[in-house]
Length: 293
Image (cartoon, rainbow, N blue to C red; front, top):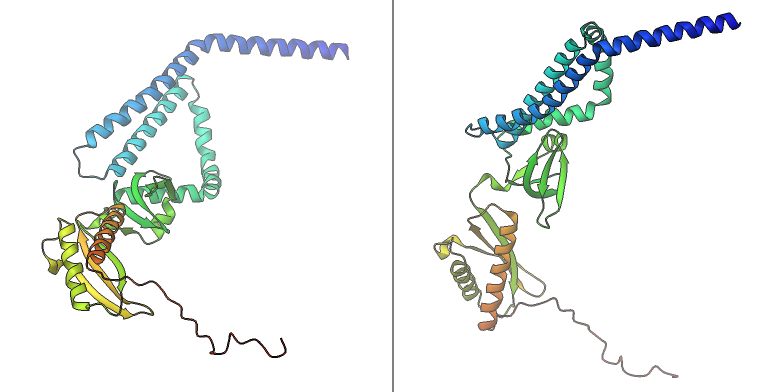
């Protein structure tokens, strides 16, 4: 038993000595490999920035330029890995890894199916022209300004300055409403006036007020005024006009300014904006005390 332990100890010492010799012999290669890896990290960042600069003059979208820069950066890292394997004389090991990469790739692909779908969708979104940086869009019940399109999600900034991260797959598969696809946006607001009002006078007054409030409106004819219904307590109307903006926030601001202006001129001309009124009908003898009380 003691002889076996001694032999095992001697064998272990020999192997440790051989490993130490190998480490000392290959120490320069390890140092060079580490330097190559560090240089590759910095080089990938520099190449990414350089790629963005070279693509600035192209007509591609900003998001597509960013995706190309990231791909070039990844290729630099992969090239450095191949070089490191050659320095460490691990090319045979790399061939073995490639041989098993098929099965491993299938397993990883199934596990990362959602992530890969978002990556592919991000590349598609970066290429199409229906959505760009700075556009005001509405998708998946969220609306805001597009500030980023990467390989995972589309980031939009809402009117309250909160950020929403929409997975690329959902944006690509669902309808997208792009408010920035045209040079103008339409403002619509509704109101009502009392039944005693002069309807023609109200119509002319509203159209005149709107045209004078907004510089983008050249004449009263560009303001659409429509009476919509006889309401319970008012005659309701709808006013439509365009402003030179594609931002949903600017549309809300224009609607606010229009409402302030309309309320002011209505007060000046004693035009009433009724509120709902409930009439209670009591029997004539409801105040008489009940018999026997």
